[in-house]
Image 1 (spheres, helix red, strand yellow):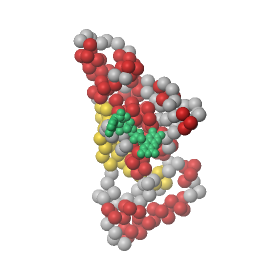
Image 2: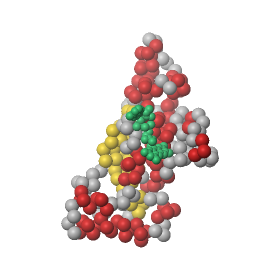
Image 3: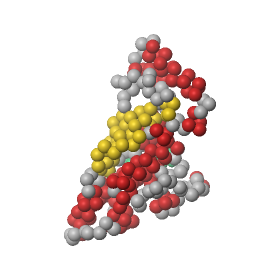
Image 4: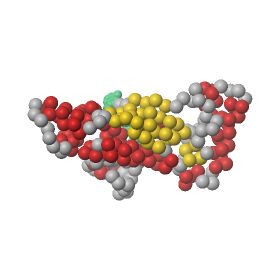
Length: 215
Ligand SMILES: Cc1cc2nc3c(=O)[nH]c(=O)nc-3n(C[C@H](O)[C@H](O)[C@H](O)COP(=O)(O)OP(=O)(O)OC[C@H]3O[C@@H](n4cnc5c(N)ncnc54)[C@H](O)[C@@H]3O)c2cc1C
């Protein structure tokens, strides 16, 4: 089946409970006094004293994004990843993910591409070799554990309109989940044009950033 990016699921499997409490405790420890105000989060972000956010952790399940997405997200080295295996699993019946605007009308070409893997498997080529014929758009499930500091960096970089639509779709879904868990931090986070100012120079998109709430 050919699916569009809006079918990608971002599920929060685990997160640090009461993130505000642990941040206040850590900040209080640095200055030797009790911190009571939630405003500490904004202050730490502004001062770039963001190492304290490393005490807050998330584990996301990202279901149904593509292998090209996997190649991009794993560039974010401060985090832990577990991906579906093309060695152990057969990919004959897996879905293909692509922007609907571009897949529509091109279904025959996409099916022809997927057929190569199926034919290699039918000829008893092992999964770990037949996988070489799989397209980048083949679906994948991924577990991602990341701390809040690294997540701020990820959202800052990946919500930017210079990213490909699939990455932006996932980044916005992740951002939304993180916001509902820790609004004091993630209401302050977005691409540079939202957080401070665009640094892209001549590569700037020139568009106004518009996203669904909470961004
Ligand atoms: C719009 C866009 C286009 C891109 N295009 C390309 C491309 O064409 N080709 C390409 O290869 N990549 C590309 N990237 C990926 C990009 O270069 C980064 O690899 C990716 O965004 C991860 O960012 P990061 O290093 O900040 O994250 P992480 O790896 O999570 O690192 C977080 C932070 O830790 C520090 N850090 C981590 N590792 C080191 C280290 N070894 N040494 C010093 N400091 C370290 C840095 O401060 C870094 O910002 C693109 C990214 C974006 C957003």
